[in-house]
Length: 162
Image 1 (tube, rainbow, N blue to C red):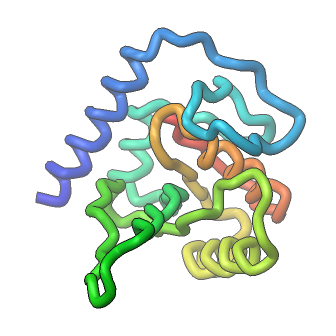
Image 2: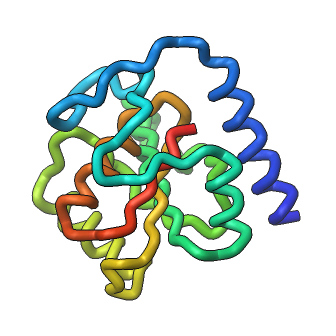
């Protein structure tokens, strides 16, 4: 079941990426600060950019740590008192670590500490471990997070933009 779910997620990602005929913007000099759901660059200096086939091979071999930086959906305003709020179901790559809200262009100190701590836990403190960062297709959150992780000294960062 888990392998089937991963296959569906990876196939859907490949389909979305292959059907997106939009031109890719150049790699910026800094973090993206707004309009996070727009076409992303084809490159990220210092990181390896993965295709779906490459990401799947890493996942199947269990040779990297997958970090999902998809933001947490906000709680709707004006919920009646006593209403139980549950996050909506998310599809992610099985076995990945979800570090929500860590892909914004500017992070609060507490969020940056959360990201650093999450990475340390996910990699068991190994700064040379392969870290694969992803979100959704055409989402700057993963690009920002991968760029930020490079500044922390991680030596083997891969970005999966699809």
